[in-house]
Length: 318
Image (spheres, rainbow, N blue to C red):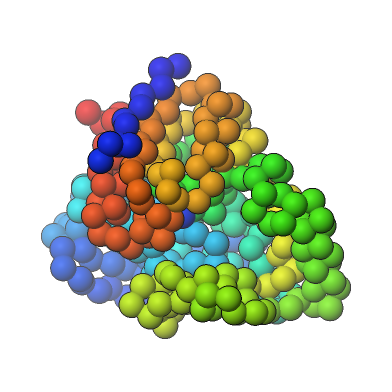
């Protein structure tokens, strides 16, 4: 089918209600595979009972919680005429009531299952038009989102922002070659054998014993290092993460797709590899000079990405 390209090279159960600016939120929970997951429904502040809106389920980067980049994009979607839904994956944030052996594990399988259940849940909400359900994945959860919407009759369209779409070649490039990957898999199996091994997720540049010793978004208090952030990583999750290759999964996707990325952000080659294997309708927007972290919270870049995603998601309603 036709592939559209927007080039910008020239220029990752009711519990309460709150109001913020022009957005109203409602805390909810839902069950999946024996775990209770905490979520948030975002609506326009003037939403009236009985009005049904198209909804976007928004998921974030690895180790993230819903109050980080998912919340930023959820608010942007509401400003563009959608309801939005975010949630904490099992073992993370407010959905964290699990044993240490499985808490803070970056599990592609578990997270994909949680997204599928989130789609089922939002379809039951009275504020939602169940015929207009969409997905938006950011960074690492882009692969999970693709897997969760593929073959899913509840979902109409999907968008990805700063997607981290890796394959075996990219994994080896990022994680120290074949020997580096093998070493991390050994770490993973040793951690799993002893019931989990949790380390800090973020640290200053050059720090030892942390997942991301690079400073930046996850380490800065005025960005991603918010009180809600777990700042944890379970080494038992390495094997599942390193052997997960969503760039190879394009043939599974049967939904119209929009991607916003930048050559200055993480692994753009993964997006290109994915698109080479995707035969469906794809809108792509490449922004110039936008870093991975800027896609999370730099307002100008978030708004530009949100504009493209919203236009794509509302296409069937036009």
